[in-house]
Length: 454
Image (tube, rainbow, N blue to C red; front, side):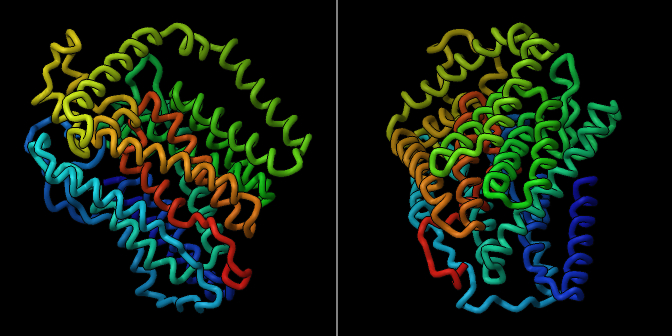
């Protein structure tokens, strides 16, 4: 219930801001995108109209197993109320939507539907329909946006979304207001207290998902900072992201945010003259982080704690994923179906004794999930997409208009975060996470157009 109260509150505030911007004769269209970004971490649903999971208490895979109308469509109320004018073609955003990627994904979904090893067949369809909803909504609002509006909307949306998570994190676990841990998700407190120390969870279902969202937010603000866009605000927001990530106590996320930001900085700086002041500040920050990890209680989390057990768990996940791949190396076991396959069809004796947790929860490696569910065909396309988009993102992060440079750089950095985090977790497939990547990827631009079209 609390999530839907927040959704209504965000919409109400956006309507007021939209009206005020109109009165001030400021273009308010960026609020359409800003409101969308703020909605994503709340994972709201207007109407759930069916589930394909016939097994009680057991997941099918890492993504949704139900059909639903997403809450993002509520934003259309703003369009209905204010009837914004579409941007003239001469200055409208020229979205070169990557149709090839969508077609390939659609083909993989069709293969999954008819995959003989997938006994439920429709396991990937709910996620496919949600992705279609997001893309369709982006197509609708893009007719009202310039690239300046897009960057402003992304910045404003991430700023308010991170600010909300910052407040909730301060309440719990910092101030120990424990009822906040399950205020937004009934299962929240179970994951927030999964270790001896309470972890920040925000409006998410798992601390790792909150941390990954903040990693992607941090790389967006860092991309803005490198391009000298609202540098003071960027510093504040990056610090808030780091603050939140710290209190999630997610070891994978610590490495992800450090490695991701460092990679973005090094690659970006090699294409422009390195700013010594920024380099010194960045190195100083890394040294401070290293000191914290080595000489505070966090060192026990990394070098003692349950680290050996977790490594063994990942090895078992690795073997189970390879077991699925071995059973169907070409087509995989079906999109969003690997948990269902492991529990009902896979012979676990092939990998030794396996506790029930490992066959009732997703494999803790996003890339191995792709390998298991889509086979060598899907995995090859997955790798090609990530590497090609990262290469193009960095290639076109200084050649374009400033607005496009930032979006391209942030998208490439987010893909690096995805690769890094995905090595030991499946949070990449949370319904609060992958839409962020879709949104940024939708607005990337790898061709140079005349300035009046930007």
